Length: 357
Ligand code: NAD
Image 1 (spheres, rainbow, N blue to C red):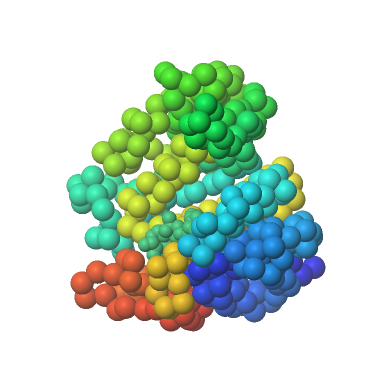
Image 2 (cartoon, rainbow, N blue to C red):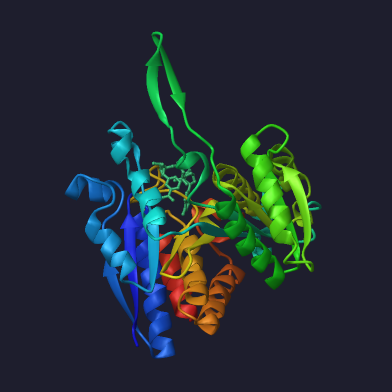
């Protein structure tokens, strides 16, 4: 049966990178003799402009009906000053919630070809860098109530609530332990248990879940130390698991280390239902519409989608190999350019990867 993919291009560079991902997907479908049915729907600023809200019901329905969802990016200065309740980012948070996507897998892998683009000293990354950040996605401060900005005794006060119940912690911990089982069986849980009550519960529950995974070596680290260790000695980590806000920051940090957030894919998974695949970067309004965006994070998100939602691991390997082959030939987008490289725009990079398939 033809697999259905719901495509959400979004804003800024979203439509540009998505066009390349789609090109690659179509090529994969043709090579594998399966083909995909792609539907397109609105999200973020593009949806606000058309429907007045960042996540139309039709988009939620189209996503739910699909086998997988592929998202570009949302947001931009144009919508920065509108009512916070309908900002583009609300669309993103809303679709994650609507699909019950509580686990975000963010591989931060340094392609050997991009070693020179890496921000760390060569001796620090000599052992390679391949960290999987498992970020909780539907809880914590981004969703916790109460929240708001109000006037208290004539003073403006803003507040959010970082809140988790034990079931939310246990289910993300299980995803992390399962992920560690498929890798080198080392898991580091990141929290702030020396200060935050919510982190103390987090740690307690992770330790409880660990009893079901005796083969996995579990460590705990405070988030400030983890941020430091990621740049001091990233090779010490294999799988990191952490809550939403810490994971947002740490996965961006891990991405930066690898040379470019333009190279980093992600998968968001729930309990059954379609997974959502997207690059970790935003809509990059500073380069939107200039054919400068790196489409590889989105193309690598296609590979994750083939592997995790479409049961096509061979096709996933082929896409990753195609990206690697293009890098081998010296092709680079502006964000990962280096001396002597062959500079490609967004579209050219998409063509090159598709040709390799
Ligand atoms: P950003 O990730 O969009 O950009 C940060 C920097 O990285 C910019 O200099 C940008 O040019 C560069 N960059 C990002 N992706 C790139 C790519 N594929 N190729 C080359 N360079 C790339 O983050 P920001 O500037 O903080 O946010 C811009 C907008 O995106 C904001 O409205 C923000 O809310 C939104 N945002 C959306 C998402 C998402 O949709 N998942 C994530 C983060 C930020």
